[in-house]
Length: 313
Image 1 (cartoon, rainbow, N blue to C red):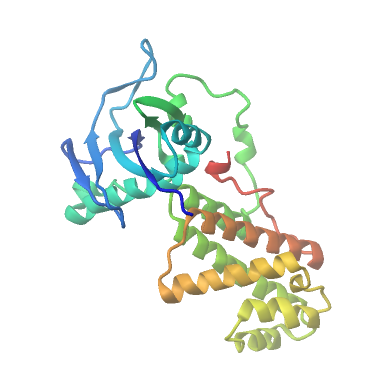
Image 2 (image 1 turned 45 degrees about the horizontal axis):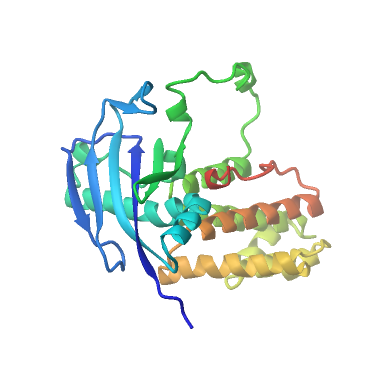
C-alpha cells in the first residue's frame, strides 16, 4: 500500500553572486511537471543582515525568495525532521533546478546581453547564501567564502604566492578534470560529464597507442578504424595485446565503464538529461580509470587526489 503524499510548503532566501539590469518583481510559475506554482520574488539589498548587529555589503548581488510545494509522505513533524536531515539535498536537487529554470526564463524573455547577460545557471558553489524555511522556521543556512570574506580574514597560510612560479605546464589531465569539477559545481552537469568523458576517451586512446607493440603510425591507424564500442575495445582486447591487465577484468570497473559509456550515448544521441549524481558519478569513474592506467601502465599522469565537489564538502 502506497503512503499518501502530504503537501508541505518550503521557502528559501537565496543570494546570487550577480546583479542584472532588471527591476524588482515577483511571479508565480509552474515549473517542470509540477501541479502547483512556485513563487519567485527578485529584489536587491545594499546590506544583508547576518545577525541583529552584523551586516554584509550585497550591492552587487541579487536576492531571490522562492516558495514552493514539496510532497512528502508524512505529517508536519515527520517532514520537518526529514527536511532537517536532508536540507542540502533538498536545496541542491529540488530548489536549485527550479531556481535555474526561473533564471533561464528571464534570459529567454529578455535576451538582451546588457540587461540579462550576467544571469546564468548557478550551482551550489555559486550561491552566496541560502536557507531553507519550513513552517516559518529556518532549519538550515549555508554560505560560501564570498559571504564570510566580508566579515572575516582568510588564514595567513592559505596560500604561498611564490609557489605560483612554476616552470612546468599544468598537466592537461589535471586541468581538464579540475575544470570538469568546476562545471559540475556551477550547475553545468551535462557539460562537465561530457568534457570528462572526452578526456577519458582521448587519454585511453593515447595510452593504448603508446603501449601497443607497433610503430606509432600503425598503432594510430589501427585505433582510428575502431568505430563501435571504442572504450570497451581499447580497454579490453587492445590493452591485453599490449600485455597489460585489462580494467574490464575488474567487475567494479567493468560495470562503471559500461554505465558511463551508456550514459554518454544517451546524452549525445537521445538528449537524455544529466543529473548532479550522474555528473559526479561519471567524473569519479573517469578519475578511477585513469588512476588504474597510471598504476598498471607506469605512466606519469598528474591526477587530483580527489574531486572537490561542493556538495560533498
